[in-house]
Length: 147
Image (cartoon, rainbow, N blue to C red; front, side, top):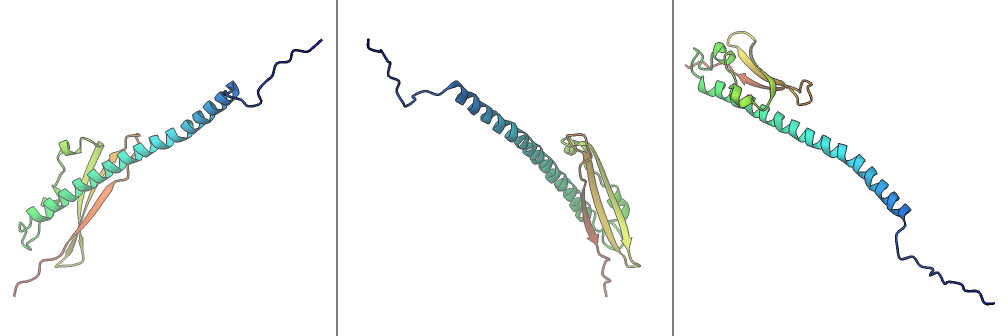
């Protein structure tokens, strides 16, 4: 009696189910790791865009106050009341949540005095926490005496 053996090839031509499950698990693990990082990167990018726009708004206010009101006071510079009454129009701050704008003038030294103007814009970030405020400072030197 002869035995009927079937010949099995030694090389495989297909992928087993276990290999597919392992590859799917590794792909899922990679996605679980990468997606939160990509999501946070998008949030940081939008926060930086808000901050850059807020910085530009504050810079525009300082420039407008310091150049367009020059010559209103006796020393040739803007008056303290003109500076402190400066605002940012509400429609230009629509992209920020709960924006708060403040501008202050401090006198440094005796007459003739140097004035420090600090403009600050603060707001609430998209995640509900207070964002780091933008603060810019300008210096107004005393007017030089004319001979």
